[in-house]
Length: 246
Image 1 (cartoon, rainbow, N blue to C red):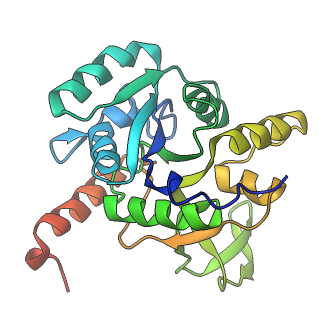
Image 2 (tube, one colour; image 1 turned 45 degrees about the vertical axis):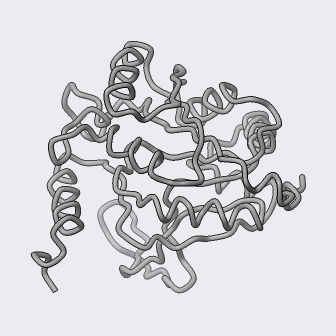
C-alpha cells in the first residue's frame, strides 16, 4: 500500500472532516456517567473537544461516534453552542470499530480525515491546524509528545530493565490520513487479527513512517477519575497565565 499523493493546490483549500470518537464506556474511570459527559471547568468534556475542533480553521464537518442514546443530547449541545455542521453515528464494540463507523459516515474520496478522541479535551485548535498542514504535504500525521520520564520494562510488580527513551514519542490524537486508505488498512488488520490501538500504528504497519507534529501544550487523555482535577489545573493556567506556577 502506498500513501496518498500530495494534494493539488485546489484540494488543500478544502476543509478536512473530523471523526470525534465518544463511544467509550469509561470502564477504567468508574462511575455511571460516561467520561465525555463529565464536567470539566463547568462544561462537559465532549463540549471542550468539540470546541477545539470547531476552533480550527482547517476543520469542516464533524462526525461524533457515540451511543445512540446520546445522539439527541449531542444534537442539542451542538445547536446551543453553534458548533455545526455535526452529525452522529453509532459506535462499535472496540475503538477501531467506532472509528470505522465514523469513516463510513463520510463521503468516499473525501481525502484527508482527522480522527480525535473526545477524551482528549485539552488539544489546541492551533495544533490541529498545524497537523492538517503537515498531512497535506506528507499524506499522514499524528500529534505526539516526546517521552520525558524514565522507562522500565516490568514483570508483574517489579521493574526488571530500563528502556532507553531516546527517539520515543507518546502518541496522541488527532491523527490524520486519507479516509479511503484508512478504511483499507483497517480492513486488512481485521483480516490478520490485528488490533492496533490507534490509526498511526495501522499506517506504520501497512504503509510506512508517519509524520510527527509535536504538541505545543499538554494534551493528555482522560483515563482515571483524578485526571479531572489535573485537567482543570491546566485549563486554569491557560486562562490565567500569570497565576500559573513558574
